[in-house]
Length: 260
Image 1 (cartoon, rainbow, N blue to C red):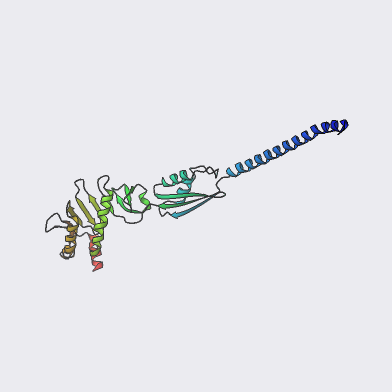
Image 2: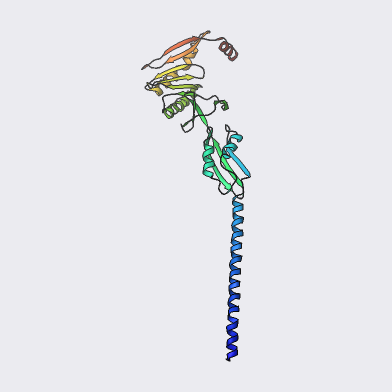
């Protein structure tokens, strides 16, 4: 290689280096711009508000407006940041809601499934009892069913419900039904039937005493006179019972004549 060729190669080397460096910088800049564009796109997508609410379930007592308002307590302006657990807590905080499930569906929809409480009885006037024996407080005006009324000391709701069910299942055989059941502070059981008859069962052997009442009830009713009807039956005896009578009011006399 001649001296002139060597000098030429040295002169070309910086040019190749700078061309390579420029290409490398251009590639890095392109990658940076692409990543930045992708990040901006993702952030814009994440900032999309929830624009669709799908509400399903069994809600005979909760209104759709109440459910929507509970959902909107959480921020719906960002689909990705929406906390579904918080939405669930808000829904289950409604008086009549028993359970709720919430899920997000891409790209901007929130679906909820809500199940209302099922009241089976009133408890101490101010509360309801559900089928699991749990008490809850809600608006009475929304209940059209003629629910039985149960009363008892605090914490005895499950015991009262269990006895209501057991005794009511027996009374079906004589076509009677409990309207009100009371567990007193002294743990004595008292029942008022739908026809107004009051039963005092006392503290012990309540099932045996109910069975004794059932055996005698039709005969007792047959002894009713024209202007008298059964008022109460005291079953707090080992073998018998005491029966009290009351006058038949005018409306009841009309009903008896229409049924005759």
